Image (tube, rainbow, N blue to C red):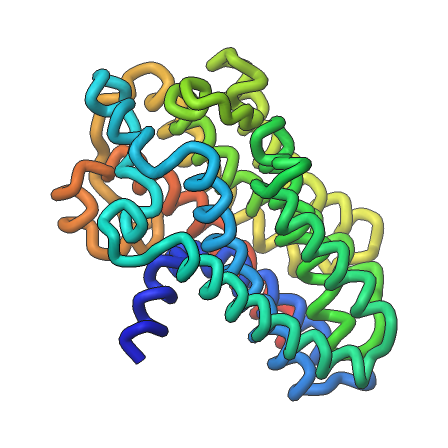
Length: 328
């Protein structure tokens, strides 16, 4: 049990809402369709969780193999603002690279078992979705493509955790694909990409230093970074509005527009980060759940986490509103 908890904690479960909530949304949307299977839907969600945690660990494996775990410490020692070092469990000697690879394999095995069960009932479409998702997941930071090192990481995450994930869970649960799930999955994917992109703006300097070409590094201009962030947010909400106007979504989906002030708050905090990175902010109720804030502040990453958590919570509230609508 201790080993399970050890690897679960190191697989960054804090990020699970960005996969679990889109999966839950697709599950709830599928529950209204003839042929819905509660069992297959639950199996699909379990598979999504396993894939996400396994991908996080695999990203650690490839990043450590290429750059090591100390580069962020070196950035901090040189006065560059960077978060705490990645893969602390490797750096401290609590685990080896071989053990990390075994943990990745275990999570992958759970996902494979879930996919096999679904395939037996739903057929070849699941093989296509799961196979493409696995290929993209490995290629995120793995050779030879290493897409996250060439400015494609945010786009890739948006596709995987939006359209690919939601289509996979939806099809697993009800055996078909419909227009509403596509209209919803794209803005969901954009809001997931927004989490990663917000992250990359704040990690712009250390990423550029170590040669990791995120979208922020490719833009290499603070005004362009902010313009791209604004475009991501506006497009996500604009697509929902367009879906309602075209008749593919119900008017109730416009309740998601209630989150526009939260999106504006995130954009403001990112503007302030670009202008004055050292300025600190105190969590407010509209920002959503912030976890153990005293601990976050004590280890000096509050400047990063307040923005990252707002981006995560924006996605969470967006999905929760749509889940409620789908269940009415």
